[in-house]
Image (tube, rainbow, N blue to C red; front, side, top):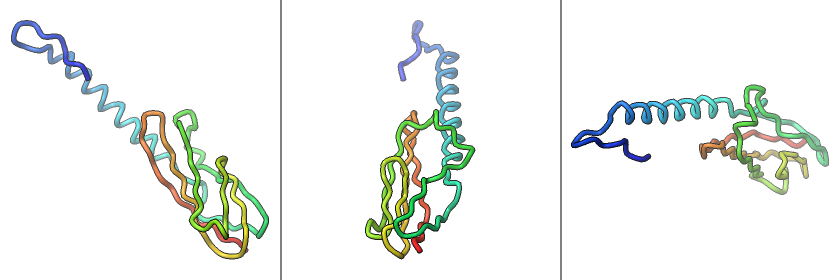
Amino acid sequence: MSMPEQSGDSFDFCVLFRVLKTQAEVKAAAKQIAKTIAPAKSTVNIGVKKTTVFQWSKKLNMENVAKITYKSSKKSVVSVNKNGKITGKKKGTGKVTVTVTLKDGTKKIVTIKVTVK
């Protein structure tokens, strides 16, 4: 943040207040957007050699998202690709952890349980 203009020995606090208020508003907006980052379901059941796609809550506006990464906790049971396609490899349970990075740099991690039958 740059400092406001200085006239004599005092700063223009009106300008400083507007900058701080704007930053506070941006932070509050980012917090609200982060609340919308949620899976549609917390658990998913799939069969061996079957696939499904990670489903997001309908509240999430993807225009706010900069990057999404997916990771499986048990790659021998369940795999997930970079597009969120989940594949059952053998019977068991595992978790898919998703890291969402918003355009402002805010990160949120969500997890779903995957049962392969």
